Length: 169
Image 1 (cartoon, rainbow, N blue to C red):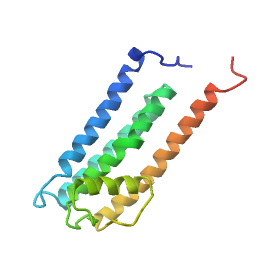
Image 2 (cartoon, helix red, strand yellow):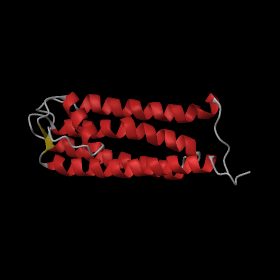
Image 3 (spheres, rainbow, N blue to C red):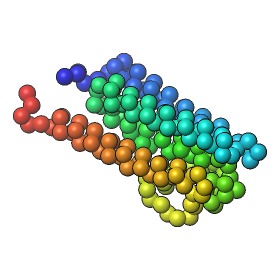
Image 4 (cartoon, helix red, strand yellow):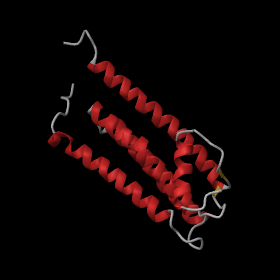
């Protein structure tokens, strides 16, 4: 059994990793969602989608195999759930362009980010809807939201059960 991280020094690498995730996702969203209509489109959107898929697989592998501390795992999963994944999906939507090329009703980066969070959490207000290739992307974002939420809840319950086991010495 691994010792619980208790000091800032023990959490430093986890906090740096979380900050890196937040910064990278923000920069991807900021850059890709502000492409001109001439630059945005199916080609750059497809490349961004492939990059997103590679990132999701690599992060899932990292969480499952490399992070040994349940508390650190829960923290990193929380950061991903709250900020990173929706921002990266919003970056990909923005890479496809606006003016109803990807999300009908989205007029700019803020709308795309809003649509991404609504899709990721599977709330689905219905005020915006995906079109074309972005329909498949929206479905994959909703499925990713289900999976990450399930993993996050399972990790939280496991950590709680481990820390509140009355038979544990």
